[in-house]
Amino acid sequence: MPAPETSLRPTNARPVLGHVNLMADTLIANANLDDLRAIVRNMVASATPGIAAALTSAARDRLQQTNARCLPGSHNLFTSYGPNAAPTQQLHELLKRARALYGSGMGFASLGLLASAVRSTIGLQWDCEGPAADILAVIDADIAQAIQSCKEELEAGRVEEYTSARKALAELRGAVDASCEDVESWGGEFPFERGVSSLAYWKL
Image (cartoon, rainbow, N blue to C red; front, top):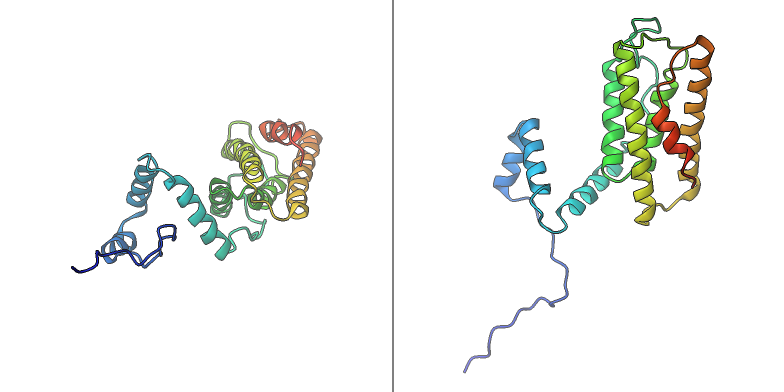
């Protein structure tokens, strides 16, 4: 009798990663951004074990390859430094990069970008109900979320260089403190209260 067929691959071997299926690659290459966002959100919400972790791991690999933490020029983040100042597209792009980093679990890598955004407000005076005030409230929320991402990154054991992490944290603290002093000098309302609270109650 012929011997029974047996698998040649050990049972504890990790699966081999291959190329993306041709049809799946065609979809990825041609779907618009809104469709891709919806597809990814549906996949993450599917409760398939490990899929969210796999997504963020792949995102970290990609962002590290593209060096997404590199700081762009911190100039031209606002249209002017007068009462009618408004955020520029460059500021929106900087914040998108920061969110991609802290959203994928690279909180410490996002801090330099957020510090750059905060520093860009020094010398800026704004209307408390204008577009500048609106974006500053958004940056404040980004800082709080980035600090939470840093905590999770630390708890997960992904921080390899504590010196660099502490430096990034100190840089953001310094930018927030400088902004606070600047706002006090012209009698404005400090926009980064949530960020200050997040920084004040956590030490590395």
